[in-house]
Length: 155
Image (cartoon, rainbow, N blue to C red; front, side, top):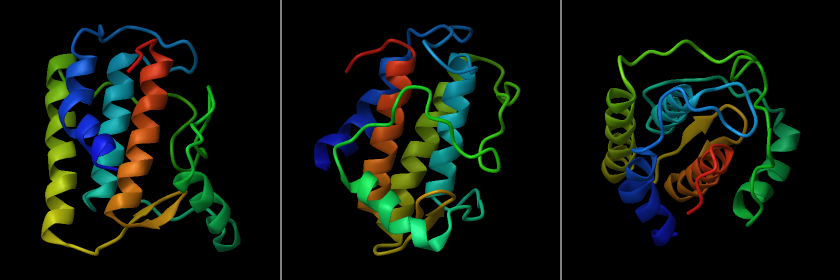
C-alpha cells in the first residue's frame, strides 16, 4: 500500500511532465491534458470536494469492491458509465499542460491531507461506493496506471 501511495504522491505527476498536452492515447478519445484533468477530478471526488451520486446498484457493490481489492487492472478502453463520465471528453480547463499538472499535484496533496485530518472517513465514488483512504489509494493507483498505459508510459 505504501509503495502505491508513494507512486501516486511523488512520482505520478513527474512521470507525466514530458507528455505533450495534445498527445493521443492508444485508446479512448481524451488527449493527454484532458486525461490529466479527468484524473484531477477523481482526486477531487476522493477528498470530498466534488460530489457525485452513486450510480451502481447496491447489490453490485460487493463485486466491484472485490475487483478494487484484487490485483486486476482496468482493461484497455474501460469506459465509466456515461452518467459519471460523459461519452465525449470535457473541454480543456487549464491554460496549459503545466498548469493542469500543478492542479493535479495540488489535488493529490489535498486528498492525502483530507484523510489525514479525517481519519476513518469515507467518501463516495460514483461506481465503487463509499471508500476509505486505503481503498481510494488502491483505486487511484489502478486508475493512474491505466491512464499511463493508455499513453504508452510504463512504470
